[in-house]
Image (cartoon, rainbow, N blue to C red; front, top):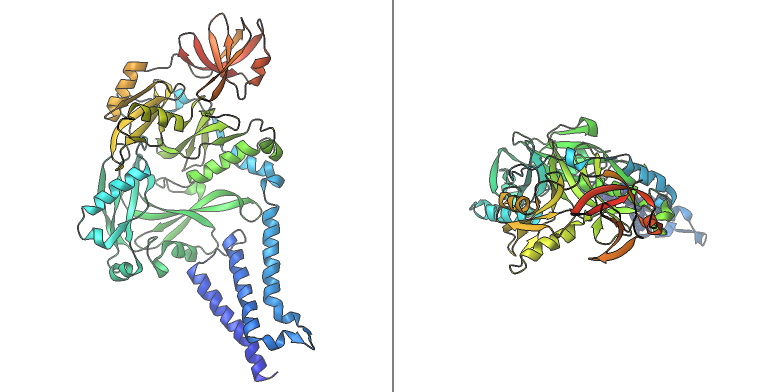
Length: 534
């Protein structure tokens, strides 16, 4: 073999290895079959080798006037790898694995009783929910940073995360470097502190770290938290990298690790966390069950809600989710936060696929344990509640935050902040979940709670999920109210209102027929909300 031929063979290999090393350092994938980034990394490296063979080895691409297949080896390997990846992804969808998708969510869901499980509000003291939304927290955080003088020119505010500190909800965001040059100039000093916003009281404060931190999402090279975590745990597939502080104020970065039920990366289920000391960079890996109690987010809300949606969509098979949609439900596309015990819970409603503007239930998703409690209570969906609250202050143009849920005398009630165009909280609103015509606003949380109790009473008129056997005195009647379809059943004791969706069998009953119902509440004297007993 001549020297020029050896050079044409070796140059593509050497440059490809340099490219592979640089690419791996810049965006390191997990050394794990389940990380799609690894597949694209290998495809890119093989394709690069193929291009380099074209550039340096053109004389070896043909032999005796025919294509030399060895010269196209890089392209061929890249094409095969891409084809394998595409086929695996194609056959990993819910069309082929609907049962697995549904089971991943259903195994987390248990049914609860709202009135007895969710702590009742007493004397207007609401300390367990994050009433303030992230947009408002960011506005308050920026104003807080603006008051810090020279720090405001050296650092920028990072992304806020809702966590718990000593069992109280907090929104926290660390300072960060605004650019590469600011990092280069101040990296030896580190990042001095973070902003903490109390989403209950609306107060904010800047807090200095016990020691400045050096690992962050705005740092570069080996101090960048994403690169540092991947190098520290090279086989871990992780996401949701976020900032938290422990109960003593020590700063950490937390990342959730995943396992997968189907194919390469389908049906992602959180299985643990990586905990990185933001000062020293020490990384510890925990299984989900062994995560330190102070860590608020082991199971991110987005991941849990996605699994619940799988259960709602595919519980009765894939084609049912596309055709008849019997029993199909999905979660509201946003959520609020509530502390239950010591753990942060995400709250969101569940809407039937055939329902329009009402929830058939709501869930609390524990972000530390990954468990989901479902409460089967019909009522207004969150955006209808927002609109109801905004209607009382429409002359001011205030906007409602995504509501959270509180227990007022056994009755589920939405509570939300009302903010102006500058994201300042001006008032608060409370809306009855089961009857969103019951709405009040107030200047403080306590005032709003008091106004609600004074106007509508502090307890439900009927206990939740009360069984009842009724005999109809007239055929069922239907009505559409605010875009929602209802069935009305008249009996000797009163009238029962049922959501049309999911209770269609009631339409075939007649006068004198006996029905088994589950009564969920009383709208007013003689009018009850109910559903057919399952």
